[in-house]
Length: 390
Ligand code: ATP
Ligand code: CA
Ligand code: CA
Image (cartoon, rainbow, N blue to C red; front, side, top):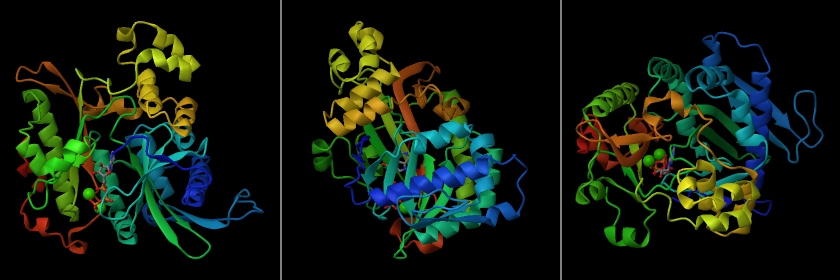
C-alpha cells in the first residue's frame, strides 16, 4: 500500500473515467444538496437519478468535456447518512472530491479487479465495484441505513455514495465512495487484512522483508506473535461493536469481509520521512514550522503529511501536496469512538494506560454475499473474525 498512489494526469488511461466520475458527483450531489432537507421515504432507497452529459450542456447538466451518462443511486439516503450519521460537512465532502480534479490511483490491490482512488486530501476512497456488488448494496441499503443509525460507532465501511458512469461505447462502471481508514498524517508501519481463517492467509515472509508496505494476513499476524493491545475498557467496547457489526453482516449474508488493521508505532513516528529542514524548500507555509526545532514539528499533521508526500521527490506528487495539505483535525472522526485518537484507536495496557501504538482499523469489503463467492475459506464456521486471537 502506497498512500500516494499514481496521480491521474491528462495523459493517464483513466483520466476520462476520473473526469466523468468527479463531474457526475459534483453535479449529482450538489443537485440533491441544494434542495431542502426532508425525511427519507421508502421510495428513496430505490431511487436513481439520471444525468446525461455532453459538450453542449443543457438545463440540468452543464457542458462537460466528454459525452457520458451518470446515475446517482439513492441520493437522499446517502445524503442523510453523510450528514446525520457520518457527520460530514456537505461542502467539505463535495470540495474534497471535486474542487480540483485530482485523484490518485492505487490500482487494483485486491484480486477482484476493483480500482481504488484517493481524494486529493486522502479522506475518501472511490472504489469501483462489480455489478453484483452494486446490486447487492442497493438490496441491503435499508438494512445498512438502519444499522448505521443504530450503531454510530460502527467499524463497518461508511459508504457516502453509490454511482454509475456509462461511457459512450457502453461500458458501465459502478463505484462507491467510502472512508479511508488510514490517516494522511501518520505512517502506517504494518498493515493486516484479517479474515479469521487460515486458508491461503499468509503473505510470504520472504517477500514481506523486501516489501515492508505489503498488506499482511492472518498467519503473519499469528507467526509474528502480534497481539491486539487493548486494555479491559477499550477491549470491551471494541469487542461489543465488532460483535454487533459481524452479527449484522451474518444476518445479511456477507461472509467475505476483512478486518483491516494499520499499525502506527508512535516511537518510530514518521521518521521514515525526510528531515524537517528540507520542508521549507518545498512548501513556504510549512516552512515556518519546519524551521522550528524538530521536536515541535513532531506530530504536526500538516507538516508530516507534506513530508510523507514530498519525500518521494516526484514533482507531480509535490504539486499535489502543495495544493492540498491533508489534516485530520477538521474531520468527522472525532465523533467516532474507534477513530478518536489521532484518527485511530490508541492501544492501552491492562491498567487502561495509553501505549505508544495507534491502530487504524475497520471492517472492509462488505459487499459480497455468501452465495456469489466460492472461496474455500467460507467453509469456516461462525463469525470468522473472532477466530484470530487478538
Ligand atoms: P478482494 O475481493 O480480492 O479481497 P477487493 O478488490 O474487493 O479485493 P478490498 O478487499 O476491499 O479489495 O481492499 C483491498 C485492499 O485495499 C485492502 O487490503 C486494503 O489494503 C485497501 N483498502 C480497502 N479499503 C480500504 C479503506 N476503506 N481504507 C484503507 N484501505 C483500504
Ligand atoms: Ca478483500
Ligand atoms: Ca472484494
